[in-house]
Length: 185
Image (cartoon, rainbow, N blue to C red; front, side):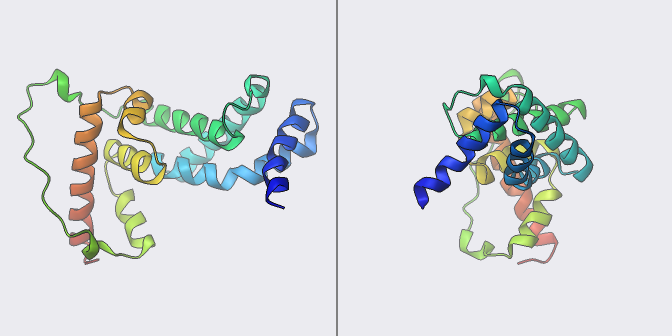
């Protein structure tokens, strides 16, 4: 049964490549919720996430002939969603300052935190993440929730690895502050 489950998306993709309309709908239904959530975590705006979702599927469906199973369809689609979400942030003029190009003073070492103290309900953490500035939220989401490493994030966003690292450290610190101020601890 597990083997059948892994073949279904490939069969759907192949049927879509042949222009089978119900397969497009099935593929959309299979991936839309997860892709919407991915975008929402990055753009932090339902309307923008809905727009990203629709544009991503339109692009994916138009480019199905370029999909050659080098990854799963879901991974390929997620990359489209993430890139489109980041473009939305760029349109908002999110300025991530490249640390390598500034005269910034070296950051102090990250404080040692008792991570076990932060065993919070998922909903509270999500609300705290939503309060982060766009740049921090994007880096934190891509790293912690989407599983990209810092080098990949650097390539996706187009900033240096040091900037990604700094943004991630600052995002964690800011998240902790938001959580503490919100009385979640």
